[in-house]
Every structure is written in structure tokens, then in C-alpha cells.
Length: 465
Image (cartoon, rainbow, N blue to C red; front, side, top):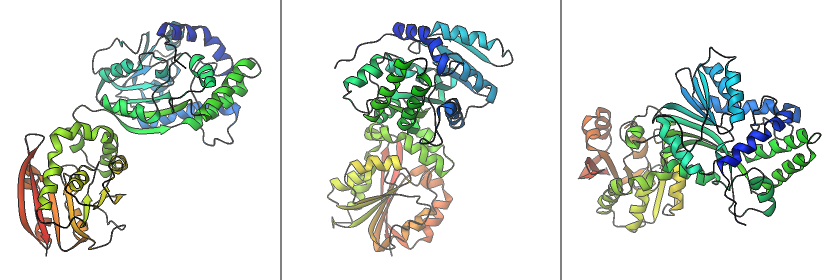
């Protein structure tokens, strides 16, 4: 079945005409949000608005909006959430919406809050009337799926967001490409929108825009419960609509429809961003967010580093079945380089689950583990590896040199340790030099090369004595 091309004018007319209907049973204040439930099984229709407010609170908590923030609310509707955000945090909020009816309602409502920094205007998300880098946050709920040119809208959001700014939103998603006839009728045609991204492809597209996804949650179970309760709420006055909501629940079960949440950060200079890190949790989250586009972005400028490092190790390790630990495996670039040289027994460890998921798909590792190199790696046995290789892991804002002691204990006597570091890090880090001198090994080779075209690197090869 071919999707009809809907227009913004049709969406505007739909919401202008249906405003009073939705107020009569969904929310008299006009907020058309879905619920976020403490208990999916026991939730009741009379508590639905409380569950919707719980979702607002969840988004606010994770957005880090505060009094210094300037927030753009895409699809602000009647202005309720914008007013709530301003009241809760003291931030400035600008709301836009296609519906003239809803913007008029929001502007009237704003007159009751002269002390708040809020404003509303009728505008399309595909042509935002704001300068580049105007907002610290962009916020959107239940809106973007309605935009026919959603790719263009997401590009506009990226444009008006400041560097380091946060885009926090939920949206309807299309989990599978083949939509059932009932799904077309009761979801896409009834709500005037074309099939959307899947849960994962949405994150991929955002990442390609430089909106790196730090958090994503599939909320489809909560969407289904929302429409179950809405069906009950609509039944008395609007039995046909109640049936339509039941059909939407069936569509969710068939995976014709879903609901996703995404929290993104605008990051243009990924290298500066990744090195400007002070704790493990932040570092893990950053690499999780970067994982989807890491290989693509660094293929030409950085891949020489794992290749040079693997080749340096290979000069002293002729046995292809040697047990090798890739410490800080990331997306598996080192594993690929070792595999290309014929090595078959490679184990990887990394802090980031999302990076490891990319590495796993390459099928070059015997095992992959999530772990912090600065802690004892209890899942690995002491003196079990013929070689350990660590490329670009001991560097600014990353793993402390003391972690070398944990790795050293995993290396067999006579085994090799290939450590690749930036030359400036090696020359200036006193802790690194202290640990290197403490450990019982000898330096047998040092290879110098450039990564990122101009960044000098050392591949240092040690042998445990």
C-alpha cells in the first residue's frame, strides 16, 4: 500500500477543527500527551492525566533545563507545557505551533503569567524564524511525526540549537516497514502522517546530523496503555473514536506503530568534546552517543592508528592463535586490524556498551566484555594473555595510567604489551611515566606515526620480564 503525501496545511486544519473534541475527554487544558506509567497493568483511566504529567517530569529531569536556559518548544499547542517549564525552572521558553487556534489560546493564556519569560508564535518547524545557535534546548512532544518534511525540520532544529545544546523529544515511530491495512487506516491515514523512522534508524539519522543520542527509550508499551485508557475515556461521548483507539492498540501490538524518546546533544567538534571529560560515567555516555557514527567519521583520519599498532605487535608475535586482549576495544577497529593480519583469538574490553555493540557485529572477537579498565577485571584470569594491545585509550580525559597495573597482571611472563599514545600525552604525563617505570617489563620497540594527519603518536612495544 502506498502512503499518501500529507501537507502541513492538512495537519493545521485537523488540529484547528479537533481542538474542542480532544478537550472534552482527553485534557480540558488541551495538552495531548501520552502517559508514562508506574504500573502498566494497574493504571486507571481516572489517573491518565497524572501519568501524562509524570512524562513531562521525566523529560524535564533529564533535560537539565534550568533558569539560564532558553528553550524552543516545537509543537507547543495550547502552551501548557511551556508555561509549566518556565514556572518550574525560571527558564525562557519560545513556543511554536502550526495551529493558529492553539497559538491564539497559548497567547491568551500567557497574559495570565506576565512574570514568566514566555512567548508563542505560529510557525513551521521546517522554516524556523530564529537565528543559528539561538537556543540552549529544543523540546518537543508528540509533534515531529506530523511534519511531512521531518528531515528538514530536524535539520532546522540542529541549526537553531547552540553547540552543546540539548534536543529532548518524543515521537511516534514505525517499528517495521510493512504496515497492515488496519494500521494504515486507523493510524497513518486517520492521523495524517506517513510512516516514520524506526526506533534505531531515528537515532542513526540524528547522529548523522551531529545530534548525538545520549539516551533513547522505546516507550511502545506505554503508548499502548495510553490508547487503552483513552479508548475508555472517549467511549461515552465518541464511541467511534473509542473503537479507533482500540485499533491503534492492535496496531501497536502488530508493530505498525511505536513510541520513542530521545535525548541528544549537538556536538560539532567530537574530538574536543570527547577529551573534555572528567569522569567515567560521562565518558561512557559520550562514547555511547558517538558509537553510531564513530567508524564513519574516523575511518580516514584515525584508522591508521590501529593498523600501525597491530602491525608493530605482529613483528614479534608470529603465532596467529596467540591470546590477545584489546583493552579499550571501542568499535573494534583494532580487532579488525589484528584479524586482517590473521589473528584469531582476540578478546575485547570497553567501557561503552554501544561501542561494543558495533564491535560485536564485526565478528572478529572471540569474546567482548563491558568493563572499566581502572577496576579489577574479575572476568579475566591473571597471566592469561600472550599479548595486550591498547590504542588511544590512555589519553587526556580517559583511563588513568594506574590501570596499566591491572592489565599487566593479565599478561603472561614474556608476553607483549603494545601501548599507543599521543606523543604530547606521553611527554607531559608524569603519572604515566611513573607507572611505566614501576612495571617489570622492557621497551623493545617504539614506532612513531601521525593520526588525524597532524597528531603525533607513539606505538610503544613492551615485553614482560
